[in-house]
Image (cartoon, rainbow, N blue to C red):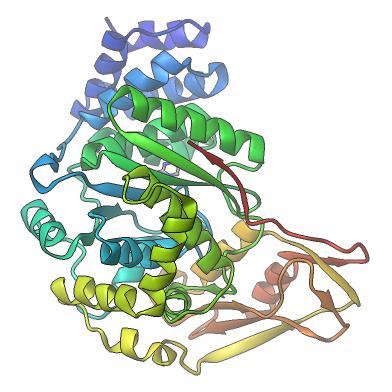
Amino acid sequence: MDIIELIDKKKSGKKLTQKEWEFFVSGVCNGQIKDYQTSSMLMAMYLKDLEFEETYNLTMAMANSGKVLNLDDIGECLDKHSTGGVSDTTTLVVVPVLASIGVKVAKMSGRSLGHTGGTADKMEVFQGYNTEISTYKFKELIAKNNASIISQSDDFAVADKILYKLRSETGTVDNISLIASSIMSKKIACGAKLLVLDVKYGSGAFMKTEKDAKQLAKIMKDIGARCGIKVCAVISNMNQPLTPYIGNNFEVYSALKVLDGLDNNLSNLSKVLCEEALLLCGKCQTKMQAEMLINDAIKSGKAKQKLIEIVSAQNGSVEYINNPEKLIKENRFIEINSEYDGYLQKFDTAQLGNIAHSLQKIDGKIIRQDDVGIILNKNVGDYIKNGEKIMTVYYNQLDDKDELIEEIKKSFCVGKKPKTAKLVDNILK
Ligand code: URA
């Protein structure tokens, strides 16, 4: 078997066998297959697509390309994963709510990827929080506190790291089979047997349409079913950021406000994800039961107390949890105002995510700054008068202010037609 043979086979649309996928993945990891050959194979996969059987075999080979965690000794654990969005802070709400109800949550999170944020970065807003504890300590904390949130180390699903980098450099990211295998290989390696997926579609998501999001969700569910993971998928809208707050400090602030009882899109989606999790793990038999438990966890302060336990156990400061307002510091800012009367038609959400990310640049280099970002003053569908504020951009240093303002003006559109926006579209069980 050699890689040229496999490229030729895939290029002509033929189906690769399990052995061939294993050969490909091991060659990618041990360096016998060169990056240019992998890139060529990725493009063949992208153009000819993979059958389900192939996606499954690729996923398993990727999952087994690094460490695979066994969590069986601490009981049935649940994981939650979002396919990535902007101001998507549900993990900071969902994990403490579920853990306070008695669900064991094993959460390995990613870093910011392109325009999307990363939960591991947000957890580090709690000064001193260690996202890189050993897997032994991870399991110990789940057994003790019902939850731990860590960053996924490079030892898991090693092939995904290599393939993802090449995909992002070769225009092969937005393929359903490649996304499904990337996400599910990591989830399988993390060891949880229950998985709630939040599959996003829209201008701020990898999937642009609801139909593609549903197809991605179905493939990931089917992969889970085949390897013994119970998966439930919520399809949600990312045509605008989930909250008005974009940027690490701001997003942590918005999650803390939800744990304090604020009702908004973030609380609504987080509650849907918690409901599905409670039904999936069998803690509740009906939605109504689940709703009651979730509302009580928030109202009673148990969920917030649980977040304090989770953060303290990993050496994080709880100062912000007790005083969320401290996360919103006075910074330099630019206000962006509407130049027309009309309804806010849409946001280019990915563009907003990219702009928020670029605010971390100092002299052209990204230097992590948690106190920069964007606060939206309007939602899609709002009526806006000429001169009214649409958003405020907070920064420390800008290379070119005029260029930034021009970019921001391209990220929204005001028009005459009234507009409505949906949040959750579908739940696949
Ligand atoms: N998230 C991932 O982990 N992988 C993808 O391919 C896309 C989103």
